[in-house]
Length: 215
Ligand SMILES: [Zn+2]
Image (cartoon, rainbow, N blue to C red):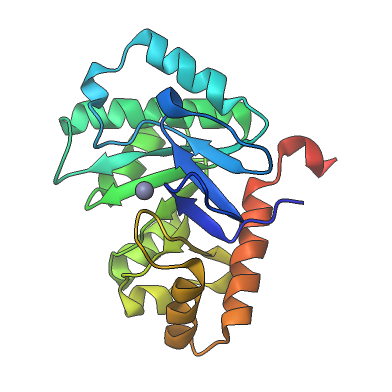
């Protein structure tokens, strides 16, 4: 049973959370769950063969339930070609391991979906974290099978366009609590905090269940 409410945080002490970490800083603690990846703001153009080897090794760890944070950012970081190729490396690994990908997407929706399609990896599920795009962007991502994770800042129309079975919530690197986020999301959706946390936990459970627990 994987009891995760906060699908994306960088706080190493977070509970009931998927803690996102760089493989070079991966230090698994008992009872915690992780995702590992190279953030597009890091110097991804300088990654070595050894770095990718380490990523693969960490991604296989039993407490690592997803690959990422990876993704693309048109406003920051390396050239988009390099970002795309690093993103695809993460997708390939996720595909091999049967794990989803936690994706950072800043005005790069089409770039990311194109990179995934061209690599023949459209079966890899993307968790779009820190979803701030509008309702049109939300629908594009939902049509591509993505789950959308909302934090403390979001576009209400996008949230309203997100079906409850694709909804996730997160704290990322903000100071808010996951209950604050659940409360904001609940208000917008005219639901109770309980209903939101139940939906988000169920979705996380479904997404992150280890392949061998399907049997
Ligand atoms: Zn993050």
